[in-house]
Length: 302
Ligand SMILES: Cc1cc2nc3c(=O)[nH]c(=O)nc-3n(C[C@H](O)[C@H](O)[C@H](O)COP(=O)(O)OP(=O)(O)OC[C@H]3O[C@@H](n4cnc5c(N)ncnc54)[C@H](O)[C@@H]3O)c2cc1C
Image 1 (cartoon, rainbow, N blue to C red):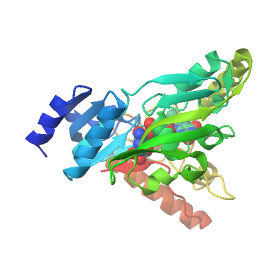
Image 2: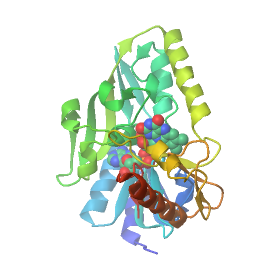
Image 3: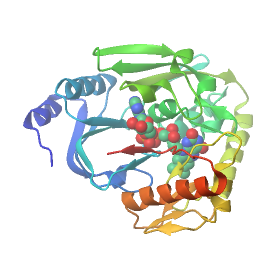
């Protein structure tokens, strides 16, 4: 275990930040796997988040910034450093047709806020269990909508120059479940979305329809990290996994969902190793049967 008294002193002196030592990361991931992190920090303001990241970067202390942990797999060995969790950064502000949201705001909460204010564009996001930070990072999307369609700009902290900066939509180089943030160490602080006016009742009907479709198609009764693999040009990934005979296939407590082959689920006592081993078997079988290389959508944090 890594312990650092200067780091602890720094975090204690930072009024707008809570931290804990020796924390189970399984509790911070929707798939419920992962060992213990030496430190988990919860900044409560943007400036506390920037100050912490700046300090960790200067002191060369290993860190990762995460949101709701709904698209990631922590390692069984845990994390020798600081996992920074943004879920205390929850401010939302409305200015005419735009919504400003801090990085820790839940996508579903923002979709509901937009609906109540008769603002359309985030219907697709209702039910995606991530935060704004994770959603901008991943260019989250569903049912024909994506973050890139509604994002005006994001603000980020660049630890290499210790500065808060802004990036307009085109600068994000959005692709299918990817953005420029995957290629740098910048920390997403907030985002501004440009929405359109629409009858709140119509928005609600559309959102409820998406939620019903999720409940019908996705294995929501079990912990998962969502779609394990990315969509792949010209093929349906889940269909290939199914046709490779893998529906219901298990390694330890990890299983290819019988309801939706695109999801690896935790049947109760999976380890991170079970999940990683299962993912590599799926990739290998799909390659053998279809000569297609499928790529993980989930991120590994170790
Ligand atoms: C049941 C289920 C259904 C899902 N359905 C969908 C779906 O329909 N569409 C979809 O796109 N996704 C879906 N997902 C996946 C996931 O919810 C999204 O990708 C979501 O956007 C991830 O957000 P998060 O806050 O959980 O990110 P995390 O999982 O915490 O992190 C994901 C990545 O983003 C980085 N990151 C997070 N916050 C920041 C920040 N502030 N600054 C810099 N980097 C950051 C992390 O380091 C990590 O690399 C689903 C997941 C589950 C469990």
